[in-house]
Length: 156
Image (tube, rainbow, N blue to C red; front, side):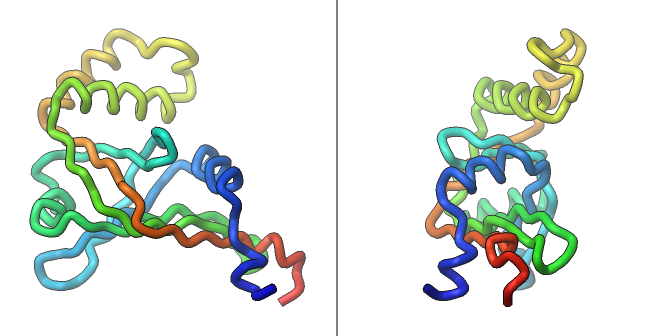
């Protein structure tokens, strides 16, 4: 078995990893030919990463021109701890305010530690106001690469 096969994550491991991590780095194709990388909060819906951002952001300008992106979630400090998921994706930019509001509520529910159950009414109102200026991003995977160096048990 190759080293690459040894460190590959299973579908269940990918799902657990994405559920525990907090930030995805999104790379879009900038107008100058250089990758444009930005961190995003995200949720996973039916195995797909979803995020939101302001509709006038550079990443959305880039996606309107070229709807492809690469996203990466990674963890680990030392080589033997490194693990991650990289997804080459087609990106659907969602502009429906109701869908964006629901996405915002889901994102804030995930990232607000004291939101067990319902979000506070003032938070829900703030999200609804923001949704009119934001867009959703659905990352539809073309290919996925994964790695978990912990599986090598220190043998390289």
